[in-house]
Image (cartoon, rainbow, N blue to C red):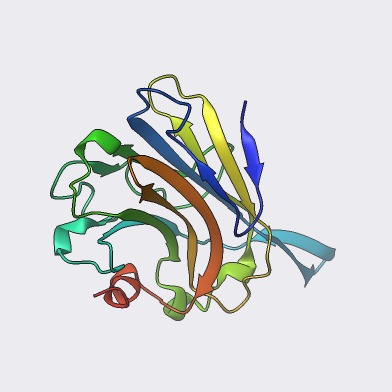
Length: 199
């Protein structure tokens, strides 16, 4: 049974889930509907927004110590092989996850303390787009072996003006792994800009 979290809530993932090593992080969003005046009255439209999910593998000091610890549309697998990206979804159209990140907890190196899951808007500045133009955003964590949803966090805050979104983090707690629902907006028009904040 899936558990719905609120912003700032933390939950154990592996405690009580013996043998849970494979996680799938699903991220979803939809372009918000806007109304504009047309020749025949009001018309509804959706902006063409390309969101990109990424994972940043950080050490115990919240530092990104290797370039290959940034997993995103231009580097789909971490250097250690523990984190893999499903590939870029250009539109966010349709039901279900728009992008997924697969994590093999058994392969995460000892010097990686957390996996930060973030979303950026591609070419946000050029297109004059921000997360106020996105609706129905969520992050969910699934058991990679049976695709059972364990946790879901719906991102319901107003993120107007923000070009990046830190959705949550999967982090070590002793021998266990936990999830923290963060939901924090940031100003970072490209994933590389956001990653530099952790270097």
